[in-house]
Image (cartoon, one colour):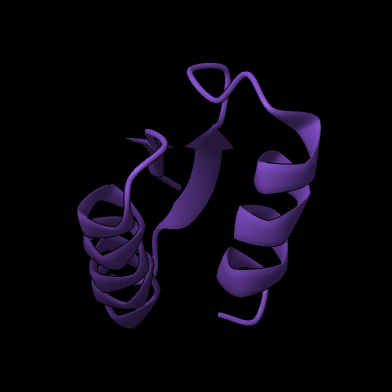
Length: 55
């Protein structure tokens, strides 16, 4: 099974693109791994993870 790595940066456009990629990958049957290392603020990282783990 393929796994797509999605890099998320600390802006809203990147979060929207990540949501789009997650949904596209799940539709194709691929696994998804999120790379949040480019977000330095822990509180912001937690907030983004809450948004992305819904999908």
